[in-house]
Length: 356
Image (cartoon, rainbow, N blue to C red; front, side, top):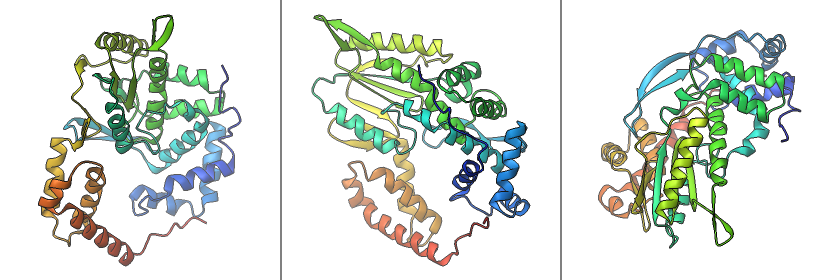
């Protein structure tokens, strides 16, 4: 098998500069760690040559990660988020850019990386559910995926597909700083999480049965939203075979599928914050409560509420929300919110990037 990324030079000064620019783009320059970085290095060249030296000497220097616990508003789960210093984030971006060739392994329906998010995945499931022979669904969830990713197996996976010692060394060093598994909040972790699960994704593509002398896929369709998996099919027995295969493969990868999985006759799919039916899409009930509250409180003046209204409108505009619009004036308030945020951005001076 052909290994990739062999021509990437992570010590190339142009490569490093571009990674720095990409990392700092759209970040708040008033952040303490960014202000400290900008004060220490007057030009992008100064910072780039320092990073180049550390990479060549294989001695990375940055403050350790600190963590905090937050409550995920969509699932009410407590998650431990890793907070990285801006310099370590730059190294993350160097590693991610170095792995660019390998991203082709990420499956078409792995919906949590670069342009494939909730809306994309929801529309795909909605389209599949309208097919006449789709009768059953099965949902899986990997238990504490980020924390449980086995580092030795992940590195073995990368070495199998990547031929670049310097890049592999950088990734291994960054992984060591995460404690166990991967760090939620890390740019590199997001890519590695998708890449590692691509092994399970492509394995699922290979699941066939023989019927009348022909190979037929056991699962009609399947989709990933990070570690949440939905499988759609026309035969309950085949769905159970797929489930057994997924559990076995996950165990082989050092992962555990939650025992709450089940095969059920298709009515709707609850995934990505939506309830997806064959003829319409709804926002998940617990999400709708927050959305409704934001629209009710919005008075056409508060900028923070305006930003929240815009964000929520981005979720609900892809659903059948016409009745809610009549009651809560959703379209009108979203238009008002956009105008307020637009005016605010014109008043505030944009922070200029002081690197030359």
